[in-house]
Length: 350
Ligand SMILES: [Zn+2]
Ligand SMILES: [Zn+2]
Picture 1 (tube, protein in one colour):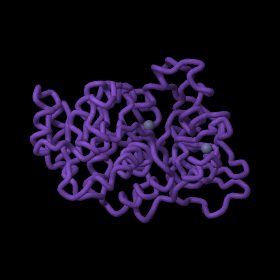
Picture 2: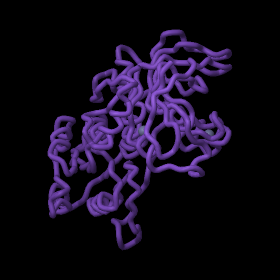
Picture 3: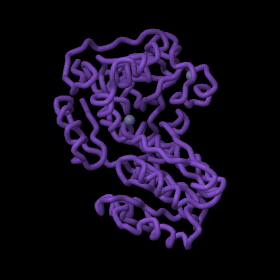
């Protein structure tokens, strides 16, 4: 079978020929429907080096995966051949307190997980940018409900699940008439707007530098937009909240400037979550943020939340915009992703 692999750190992806994997005990091989191309794959290609992780290349890219059950290993129950499934991307040990809650991204015993500490398929182990993929434990699979398009399910496993987890943590504060600030309306941010709209009665204030992104936010349900290029962006946000500040802030960018804007726009006892992986920082202290502001970061989401995201998509309450590409187009997809030329998620469909 053909696969799009990362051959080494600091290199582009290459198309290679690999044998079709076989399922050992407890494992499942899926025939891939789609594998989403994620910004973090660009980090793997350009920013990582030996020693940063306990794992490294070569491995097949693709950590947002969906497909159909192709082969079922000994001891696996409850799945049938041909059934449509989405892959919960982070693969933890299955036994630590976080994994028991389905929150594998925060596994505290990654060394005991599949692949000597690899984070999952496409993150140290072979991922879904191939015709077939080995899922190292059947518990990482979530059934795709009803008539949901299996290809659309692929980006939902990360670009959908990550903002959903962030929104859900702050749901009690997203009260009708309340204000939720969404910083950055890209691949994750536009999904975040849809989750807030689908799950709460709060008003959404969307912030971005690009008018196109702000238009997308409105189409997804945002009530207000602010261009963060405006010198008085912070004042505009305060004005919308009548001086009180936002109940919840979700920062899908995560640079110094967006974190500072988010904190300046928060209310006392509000929530602010940094979702974007840009690595910005802020000097948090008694005199630099509203009292009792809950400031946190987040990474991915739980297995049960993935089932909830798929259910919302199947109901039509959220939609993910995507374009299909072949494996041979993979290299170009990442170049376009890096250049910011893609609209919606690019999904590799072998
Ligand atoms: Zn990702
Ligand atoms: Zn664990």
